[in-house]
Structure formats: structure tokens, C-alpha cells
Length: 123
Image (cartoon, rainbow, N blue to C red; front, side, top):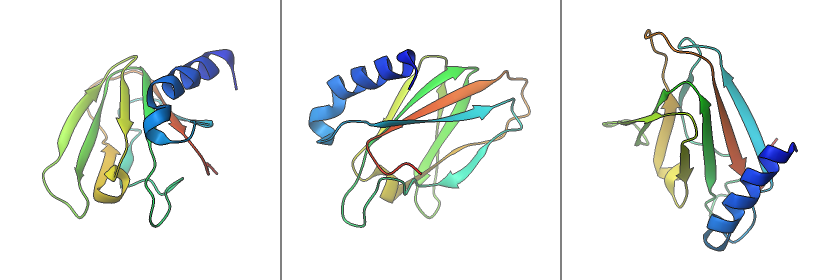
């Protein structure tokens, strides 16, 4: 892991380690070239057991993109603009009870990288 990611991971562990009960151990990266790159509605299953929840910490770098969150099985969505340097943490039952997405946009937008820190089981 590069020094910058390791530093972010250490800081997240300092802040959330007690609540999480285990350290963040991995970092995954998603690259969005422009507004045509997107992620469909889903709930993460990586690192989540059938009876235990997990935490995912997302750091956004680059262009601002909308992160949408809605109750599982449809419903009204909350649209959060994630800008450069923003941190979004999903913990508790969020992955089981909500879905999230990064929708396409026709508005001009530059590249963005999403870094997802997880405690375990990243494949």
C-alpha cells in the first residue's frame, strides 16, 4: 500500500477502530473517467456476514459526483454531492437496509477516484 493510503487508513483506524471493533485492512479504488462512468444501485456484501455488519469508509478525490442512497427495495433517495477530499462512512446496518449508487450525469465533469477502506474480505 502506498504511503498516502496507509496514512489515510491509520487515521480512519484511529477514529473508527473502537466502533468497528477491528482495523481497516484494505483499500479498493474505483476510477470514474467522466459523467458516463457510474455504479448501479447495490448494497455491498464484501466483508458483511449474514448476521454481522461492517463499515466502509469512502474517500472521494477529484471531480464532485453525486452519491445516492435509498432504502433497499426502492424508495426516495438522498443525493449527496461528494467533493474532493470528502469522507463518507457507511456503518451499522447500512449495507443491509440501504442501497447506494453513483449515477451517470450529462453535466460536464472531470475524473474522480473513490477509495473504499474495508476491514476484511476484499476480493
